[in-house]
Structures are given as structure tokens and as C-alpha cells.
Image (cartoon, rainbow, N blue to C red; front, side, top):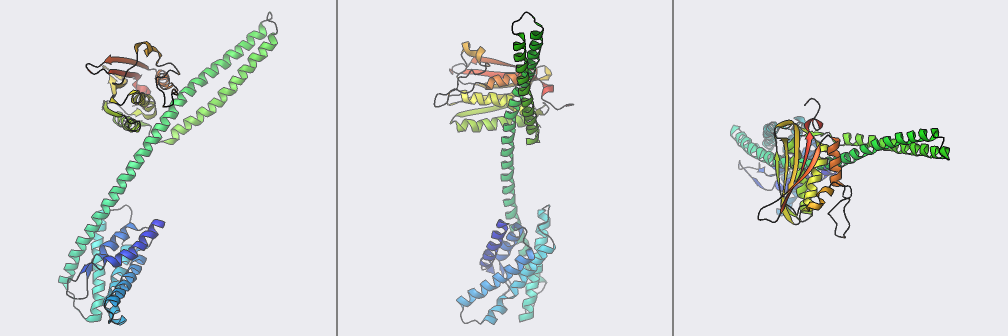
Length: 434
């Protein structure tokens, strides 16, 4: 509402000013000015304020401004003479605003051609109203030739303003779409992180259930073992451990249920094409590389025949690998992201992330999937958590898949080509029935 009020006040200022840029097509007091295009633009832009009210107040503002300006420049003219000269202009803006409201020019959905045609008719009608008032005052005759000139000018001015207005609307639409896209990307990446944690939590729930069962079995065995000294004490201790683990499991189940609900509700986008997913991964990691001051060239290869894939699962897997490659690079390099069918198998999908960074020493390749293992340290020398690749392997294995590491030295570059490849059953990533 504040924006509408501001636009309304600006209209009352700029329309009178723009009206001073004018021509007199009929060698009389009638003028064609830039006031009309400006007025038309403001009427298109203002919402929730009646156009008829805008027409009345704009007409008053124009008449008052012109009388004041003439009185200052030509002190000898009387108020009656100035009112007779400029008063008919009020009827122009009044009729323009009234017809703009009656014809509901700003109706939704917005149709540019409809608005353009009606605005020409409105301007001609408003001009006829002003010419009629002037004729009753000075007896000037207007005919079809004059109306034709007015119609021609109305067409030029209306479609010029409409084109300018639509350019602004298009630019706003593009900006809004870009903002929406960035917001969707942030949500997708956030939810993929949550999905990653939910996989681990699901595994923890399974372990908790197993520990509870084994603790209870231990309790029963201790109760039946008559040879054990203080068997009742140990049996109660085993039972207490079983109960405590059971409580941990119940709390974890509630967290898991809430996390799953949050994942499902945060975004309606659950499945995307391989191209959309690949471009999202490349785009976000390009920004990440730039934030680290690294010059990395990304390439994307995908199979267009692949069905839509589950967003959060793919992001959990591939985004992790890609960001690891970005962090592993020194200052520059190349990262290739690939999403394809496994050659010769249309029920298996292969994801790979390849970089030409420093590589992983042979003696440490078996340790990269170990929890806590890391080669990355921050500026203060603190190591990272070392859980990224471990998480990726856990998620891949939970989906009946595998992850493998391959390395080859690039000729004459001193670089090592490192590839992480994930192989998964396609049915684990697609909608049922697809």
C-alpha cells in the first residue's frame, strides 16, 4: 500500500510537469503533451487506488499547475482567462481515469493487446470530451480530420507506453523467477543435507533395536545361569541397559519421523531430470569454488533418456562428491560430472565425479571411506569432520549400490585424475511405475 501511495503522489507531480512538453496540432488552445503517456503509465502501475479518483486529482493538479505557471510567466492574465484556457484539460483526465476504471484495464489476467486497443479508445474519448468543452467555450469546430490526428497520436503514445511498461514487467518477472530459482536451490540443498542425516539416523535406529534385543536376551540368560555369582545384580543391569537403549530408540524414532515430515513438506520438487540435477550441482559448486577463490572449470555429461531422479538422494551423493573435489583443488583445475546408464544395462545408473586435483596417495586410498579420515584443514589447522565420503558410502549401500575410487595420472601435466563412481539400481531413484 505504501508503494501505491508513493506512486500516486509521484503521478500528481510528474503528470503536470510532463504536460509542459507538448504540441498544438490544431493551431488553437488544444494540446497533445507527454502528460498523457506519463498518466497512462502510472495508471498501469498503481493498484488499489481507483483510476477515476486518479483522473480527477490529476486533472485538478494539471489545471492548478498550468494556471500557476501562466500567472507567474504572464502576470497580466486574469484568473478567469487562465481558467477558461486550461480548465477543459480537467475533463480530459477525468474522462480518461473514469473510462480506465469502467473498462477495467488492469484486469487479471493481464492482456497487452487488449490494454493497447482500449487505451487508444480511451485517449480518443478523453480528447473528444476536452474538445467538446473547448467548443462550448470558444466555438471552435472539430471534425473527423482532427479526430483522426488524435487517434493516430493516441495509438503511437499508447503502444509506446505499453511497450515500455511491458519491458519493465518482463524484467521484474525475470528477476522474480531468478530469485525463486535460487530459493528453490537453497531449499533443495538444505533438504538433501537433512536427507543425508536421516539415512544415518535410520541406521542408528536399526542398531538401537538390535542392542535392545541383545540386552534383553542377555538379561534372560543371566537370570537362568545359576552358577553366576550375583546373577540378579547383573541381570537387572542388563535389563536397565535394554530399557535405556529402548528409550534412546523411541526418542530417535520421534526425531526421524519429524525429520522425514520436514523433508517431505519443505519442497514439492522430489524428482528432476538428470540435466536439471546436473546443472544444479554444477551451478552451486561453481559458486562454492568462486567463494574459495578457485578457478575451476566444470563440465556436465548426462543421458537425456534417463527418467526423472529423486532429487535429495542424488544431491546427497553427487553434491558431496563434487564439493569434496572443489575443496581438494589447489587453485585451478577441472571437474567433470557424469550421469549415465551403466553401459549395457538400462536398470543400473552410474554417477561419476572426476577432478584433476592433487589426487590421493596409494597408501591412503583404502582409508578415504573411514569415518573421521580427512586431508582437509581450515586456516587455523583444524581438521574437517571427515564424514562426507563415509556418509556417501552409507547412503549408496543403503540403496543397494556401491562406490569406487579410480585414479590415473594425466600425461605431461603432473596432475592426477581422480574419479569417484557410484553405481545404483535405477529403481531406487525413480518414481514407482516409471
